[in-house]
Length: 112
Image (cartoon, rainbow, N blue to C red; front, side, top):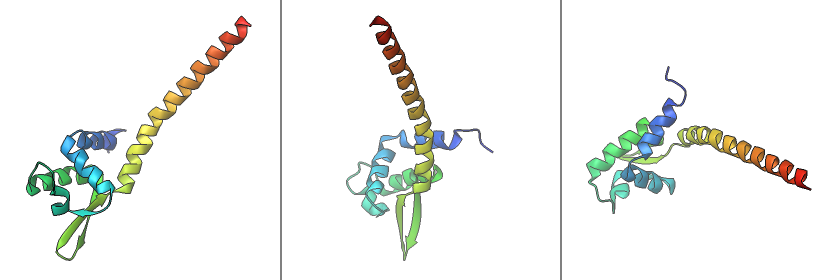
């Protein structure tokens, strides 16, 4: 068993590379073959395949076979996991903002 946040750390690490982020963004628009993904990228198809392997290991993308072609797409379950992890930080930030606003309001009320 991995420590809390392990999967999310792998996902963030996977997206830390600019080429992988570009690939992930292309897949966010819909399933694509390796050839379609590689089109216009400054890396070779084999390099794209290696980047896809990292994204798949991080559970950010999945692959499905259609005939002799493999199509990659965003793995919604993996994306949901990282979103929930990030939401914890957003919730904390909102709570801190609420506390600061309430404190400022109390101080303003004391001045009146």
